[in-house]
Image (tube, rainbow, N blue to C red; front, side):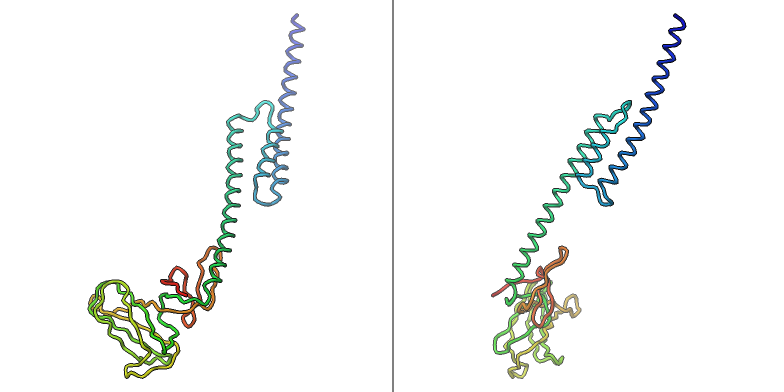
Length: 244
């Protein structure tokens, strides 16, 4: 009996050693298989949901029989997979929205060409046969606002005293004549408004009418720019009024 017990114990020990050795081989095989799956799934690119699922299945197939995948870890990986799929779906939706926005922006741009707008500017193309109107932005109540109109050669051709003004947009008109009452030729003129604020003569922003000659679409989410005749480029958000 003693001899049999010894033989049985020896056989049991041998079997356990064999299982442990095999489990080590399995673990090594699992690591190699997982590494191969990563290389195959990724292909040198960012992992997507299909690659993630392939790695998960490979991991389950090659798990250590003596230390199988923990349920909580498995659930956590499934949650990660669900989150990854949701993020990719969100990215697709955002890209679709971006494409729709660009199409809408292009349609809006085409309708803007040839229209008259009022935007912050100091220069404007003036048809002196018609009354020209604009506004000066007054930040606070002032006792006197002065508007000087300069021609293309830099000569001040008209000075308009707008008097005291409350805070806001102070409107002005110009009949196209100089200080002597002579009608000037049509062309590009510069408008500079100023007022004494806190004892210092301060330049004021002027809003002038202009015609949209072309439109530049925003790139990478940038704002659409309006190219105004005789003025230059102005962001659409800066436009005060859009006319016909």
